[in-house]
Image 1 (cartoon, rainbow, N blue to C red):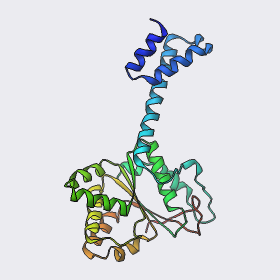
Image 2: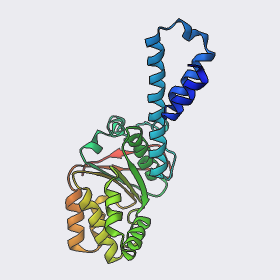
Image 3: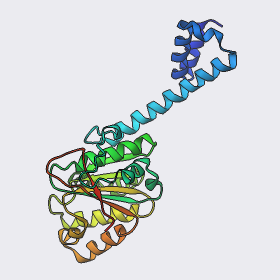
Image 4: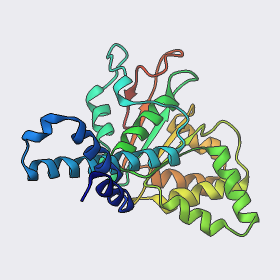
Length: 247
């Protein structure tokens, strides 16, 4: 069988990574010294890598993270209480599998969104299906879905994301329906899915912001355990320092 026929067959079988690697092997004489099994193994590894990269590309596109924040650019300086060991643990993303949550608070410009997107990037690299929303946008989409009769379908879609990143929490007051929708999101994800909440308000200020004792108690109760609270410090120093507080 001629080379072009093999390449066509490989692409027909959706083995594009293998086809690309085979073409490269043909132009690299160093592969001539390898055994058949070694060359075949190299082709299969190329196909596996291609599929993995395609998966990451799809997950990244679907997540629609606000910032291209990657762990390699994270500044681990300790002069402002940054606990690098704990951040490295978070970047391994085992907490997502356990359904834990992260709360990120701090003043404007301290890098809250960057840190949240950085953690989400690490999750995507671990093949964790993730999604970024601004809280107002998410509640608006839920309101539209309810008006269109697609509310349950939209909620089911959200449940498929192992990690949700909810940014700008506490920026604008929520409607009563928005408060109920927030509780529904938290309730659906408790113990089984993870959420990163990002906002200026510290955790102990959430009750006053939600301003509905029943809903606030329910939301805080479901987030009172199995969580990390990252309190960012400083003045407009994005991507840099953080301190962690479990209270």
